[in-house]
Image (spheres, rainbow, N blue to C red):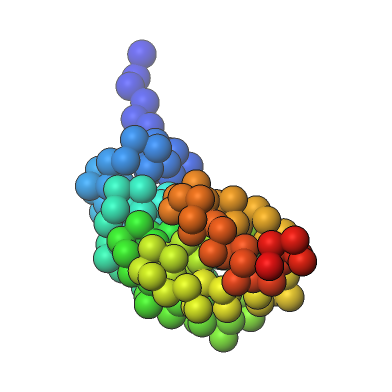
Length: 180
């Protein structure tokens, strides 16, 4: 019986990279991306999203932003998940300025942030002690995407504690007369 060689395709590579993301194996994810190129397979948005997320989950914000940049250089437009993972990487890397910069680029590209994007950017600002920036994002959030502010305040509470959530709530003007 003749042997049949199975060549990996984009689906196999993307699945393997996604597994690396879940296992926080950013080095392996980048190695697989290189192997994908060497095999003559073109990565797609999902492939890059998995690589960006693997870097984000491992605290490799520079690499995450680098992959976002590569997507743009190869004319593969990042989607909301690409941007959200990159902003989350900035949050984890204490890079609030970069998170805000990415939010600005999204605005320039007419991309609407989702709850993950907003929460990560707000949390990055809170983590950097930039309360006014965080409140500015929170105040614009409903206009941009219809996300309930309470969900974001809860996310801030989980990451930064009760006092941070209280300050966000008070500063947002959503507390009501009983809080003042």
